[in-house]
Length: 130
Image 1 (cartoon, one colour):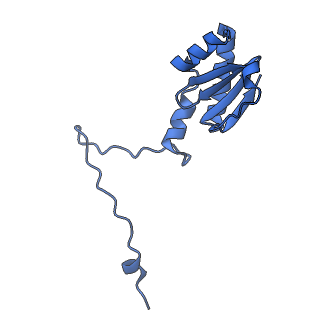
Image 2 (cartoon, helix red, strand yellow; image 1 turned 30 degrees about the vertical axis):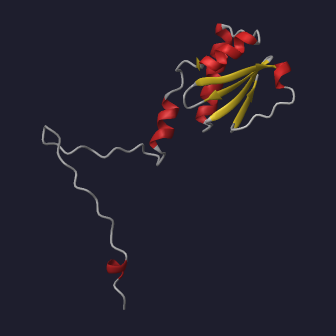
Image 3 (cartoon, helix red, strand yellow; image 1 turned 45 degrees about the vertical axis):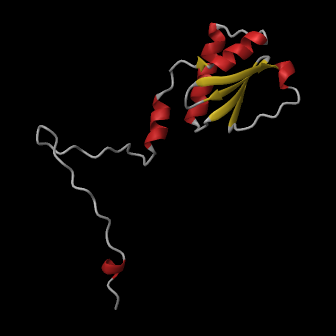
């Protein structure tokens, strides 16, 4: 008979050192087995969406303006995509197409409806239409 404990040893866990008060810290656990980055992304909703310098230039050169209501709607769209695990999203709002980095909550580029024709959008994993 083969002793499996020799062939497949149990993982070794580093000892937990007490903090300054002599108390051992409790293990951090999200409770759901969800990776920390995903939990953090879910905690970020409500943060403002920013416009990159490139996106600001594109909006200006293409005559696209985003009102405060548009920005609120955009934030809601980014929150929805983040909750579903999206990382890079195409958001179509009226006559504007916005490519958004969900993780950074930043509009990366923008174009108008005329500029969308014939364009191929790459490196996106989700889309939202308004």
